[in-house]
Image 1 (cartoon, helix red, strand yellow):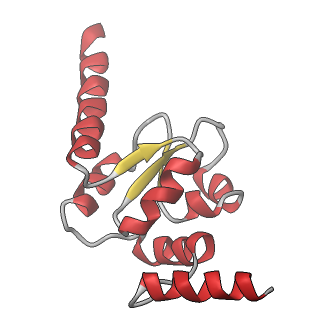
Image 2: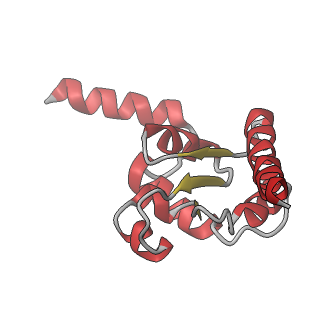
Length: 124
């Protein structure tokens, strides 16, 4: 049936929106949004609109390396939703590496890290 593919696609999009609105995950293009979301340590997806293979796309962006890559077929969508629901997350290690690279390593007391950096800047 011609309409069945569009309904199936709409169902996938509805699931993305539902999960994103619930705050479990975020789906975005390559922008600053996923970088900000990295601080939550939750799974996220980057939409690959380039047409290049996912691995090649991830090589060009630390943000993409830390998340699921959604190609036009939405092949990674089910895995993203499972990871957001608490299933084992194959992107967890890469996400931590991306978070540390883009945001700096996590500390037990972020305010202390901020004060130390502020003091360093003021001494300069």
